[in-house]
Structures are given as structure tokens and as C-alpha cells.
Amino acid sequence: MFARTPRLLLRPGFPEDAPALAAAIADEAIVRNLASVPWPYRMRDAEAFLASPRDPVLPSFLIFERTDAAPQLVGSCGLGRRPSGAVEMGYWIARSFWGRGFASEACAALIEIAATLGLAQLEGAHFLDNPASARVLEKLGFEPVGIVAPRMSCARGAEVPARLMRLRLQGIRQADEALAA
Image 1 (cartoon, rainbow, N blue to C red):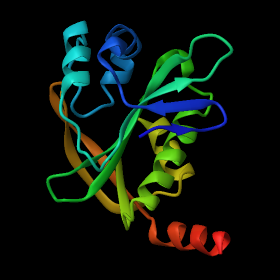
Image 2 (cartoon, rainbow, N blue to C red):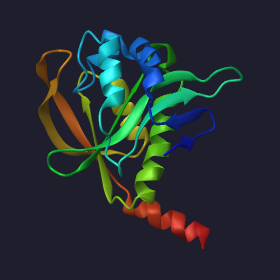
Image 3 (cartoon, helix red, strand yellow):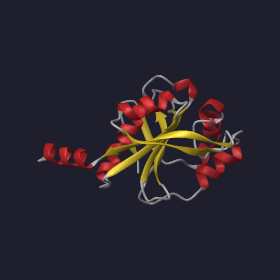
Image 4 (cartoon, rainbow, N blue to C red):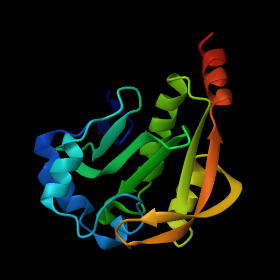
């Protein structure tokens, strides 16, 4: 599965993406805000991530900025299933691309895909000490569910308070269908 936005290409990661992936995410300021990414992040971690099995229904993308030259790896976004069965949206953006709206743009495309897949809702979470991620989720329409709970950050080697948020998708899909009719 692929997706395009005005500035971005979202596509699955391939083994040849490992060097760019390792370079883009090997930044403690990024990795410390992710739940399951190790620190330090090495080439073998990128290779293992790209080789790991993916859910055939829930997409996982690398995000590339479309340019006149070769596309540049900006980050990653995807959907994953939580142990509770809920579907969660996750994302990260390389530091050199922060503040340009790429997370919001890529995740908006991912939300459209989730709605097309017929998902009723998405969950999202952010560590309380990561207000930038909170702003992205809020901008996309996620609302707090009133739960702050500890969540493991592999890079920090500790549990960190995280705020759970939720986006209901049923209305999005119904609005799209009404516009198409």
C-alpha cells in the first residue's frame, strides 16, 4: 500500500532503506519519545525493523518528502494493534524536518486509510514530556480519554507517564461517502 499527499510519499520500507532509516532515527531526541525503539539505534536495528513481519491489514509506512531530486526520508508512521485489540497510530519525524507539518500531513493520510479500512476508531498516545506530539494528535482531532498511565520507553529504559487519546472514525467515513454520492 502506498499513499501520496501534496508533499509526501508514504510507502512500505524496503531492505535498501536501512542506511537512510538508521541515519534519520539515530537521534536520542526522537527515540526517547517512542515506546519500542532501542537506543542507541544502529544499522542492525534498521535492518531488523525493515525485515520484521507486518500486519497484512494495518499499514506501516516510511515517509518521504517528494522533491525534484531523490525523495528524502522524513520519518515513519503506521497503525499497530495494542494488546487490548485497539488500533493505535504511531509516528516519528527526523529532527531536521521538525516544525514543517510533516507529521500532521502524513498522519492525516494514514487516518483516511484507517477510515477506508472501516476502523471505527484509532488510539494515540504521547509521553507527557512531549508536547509537540500532543499538538499533532490534537490537530488531527484526537481527544484525551482521561487516562494517563505509565508506558515503557525502551530508549529511556523506564516507564514514562503517557496520555491516551482517541479519534472516532465512523463520522469521517460517513462524511466521505455522503460527499461521493
